[in-house]
Amino acid sequence: MTIFDDIKEEIMADPMNAGYTERGVRPLFKASRDAKIAIVGQAPGRKAEETQMFWNDPSGDRLREWMGISREVFYDTHIVAHLPMDFYYPGKAKSGDVPPRKGFAEKWHPMILEEMPQVETIILVGNHAQKHYLGKRRERNLTETVKNYEQYLPDYLPLVHPSPLNHGWLKRHPWFEQDVVPVLRNIVHEHI
Image 1 (tube, one colour):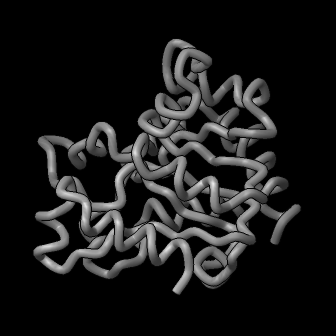
Image 2 (spheres, one colour; image 1 turned 60 degrees about the vertical axis):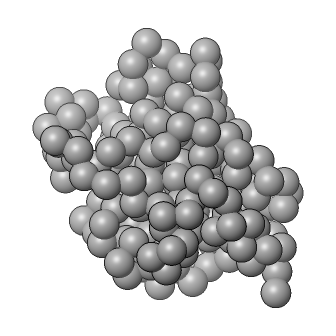
């Protein structure tokens, strides 16, 4: 049993997560002492919770394409850790999913990251992750934060969420795939 297994047991025993634990839903994250990169996203989607595989949807396909790696490397390597802002599917909202629960990442991320001393870059996918990790250092909105990604390197790399719902955003901001995606690939390929 690893320290990360112990942390999973603590998360499941936390009253905040009782409803999930009672239904047999395990917290969904991946951590490794060898990790050099951590991906912090929103929260697992319904399909991810059902299959117990994070980024197991079209958003994950696009993220892997941006990173320039296969599903096998994405899931099998110990180099990439996955720490959503909430380790459980929060439910459906009117448009998209309910945001990650407040206080979840604040409670569990520091404990997990402390056990991953080799992490060099945290990839911040979407507004929730950027707000949590960058705080007042963020620009006035997600677009400006991502556009000014260089000021957060090498510790953080902010990205737009790879959801198909953001297809319009990607079309309006071609600089993202021209400028930011190559930087992401370089960071990933330095460690794979």
